[in-house]
Image (cartoon, rainbow over all chains, first blue to last red):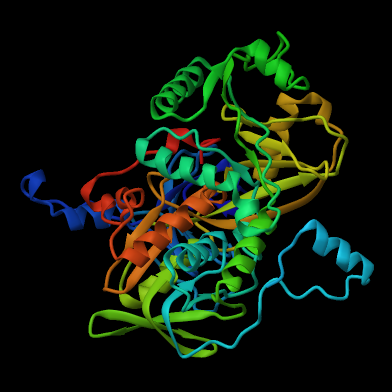
Length: 99
Length: 416
């Protein structure tokens, strides 16, 4: 069970008060007309997976609190929680030491 | 290899069981094989067995990082059914179901397949409609599976509480009379023993660290026991597959997630069929030892931790008590969690990937156990004949790019 703190409203609670929204910082490929986007670029956007044993950046929704989305650094192998940060801030680097 | 039979048992009983030999040999890896299978779970072992037994390829090695039966094959809820919705899935799961029916005889190893019937409850109107659609698809395809009314559900599952006070009424169920369970360890051990008898090398504690690529062709693997070369490499490593294929630049659309299962203390027989309930989110069967084997949903965050969240335990227990109030005082005896390899359409990925010589069979997600024999057979056929088996072809990796997804999200026992 993860214990998370929302960086916006500051409420700390266990993960059931939040919803996991998948990988953060993905950008949909754009072009002048929608049909110009190559299949490979779209495939990369739709189907890529942060399948690593290590630190990933994830979207979380503060569902039972302020209702905003934020990003979180989390280690997929150990569930260690790094920093939670707002989506408009500069993403912090992953913690150097492996938990 | 000695056959297991009543007579061999009787003879050994008279000799104080001193003559049994290990079910499979421990061997040192050869420097070169025709085919290397990375991953000694059910799918990998079945692939090796069918390669040797049906397609005459014996120069095959199965490399397992830990021990046979130590991964998800030995830690699941053992449910076997084929009532899927899309024709592509029905073909492969029905084939698998059929192979399970004769597996004990084929492997000369009792896998304790028990086709005791499988009931998927409809507890909302939408669920009733969705399951009816699956029943129609199954009937059209020739799979024995149909809807049954509430009174028949009650007859088959007398302990089910469908009183008037229930939040979710019982509206009917999808029934597959030949669905059931099997002993998961025995499936792994049986395939390992039968493959070994055909000359396949089963090498445990052999950790593949990366693939070896020469001139655009995968021709071996680097392991903790040194490099091993092969004509072709088949990676059948579930959630670890992506980690291995990344070494040659192949990224897979697989999300590793944690799935848990639970076992209660053993009680006298009280539940005959397997019961699945999508609305309250849980499924249950009673093992031959009397334990209730319970499953629920997956943890949402990506994880390679094999550590489940207690929230899911609470959900599973709550759903079971909602269905069967008589279980409320049973204790859970064991809980375990494994990493499942989820794809977006909840269907597997079978076939060639990236450079020549690299083949994958993964993405079975939460429902791989039921598919072991069929998956092994079609993958072995594809490897041996050099072209995808017709049942495997629709599950190729490029379906994600081309949008040919095989959506089985609705056919899962519970929403994952």
